[in-house]
Length: 117
Image (cartoon, rainbow, N blue to C red; front, side, top):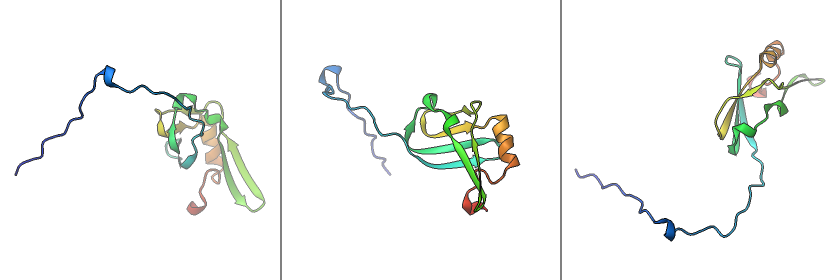
């Protein structure tokens, strides 16, 4: 049995490259498509529809909600001590601060999906 030979891209010289004639900045903000809250590790994993730069991400803007009844809504806005612990990409891992983690443990409805009740 004979294997197909590998194909290689041909290299071009810098002189043969085509220069860009215009450039448009990205004006569409990434949208979060899903999240996962792991209460064993204290991490929230956020997934987006386009890559996100972790060094510009501010987790203190995140608010987690929980509903215990029709008349009661609980919420927790993450503190400034929350740390984004990941590289640039479609997913970011956010480590909850000690206080935020314990507040969620004390109020289990926060961050719980309807399907997990």
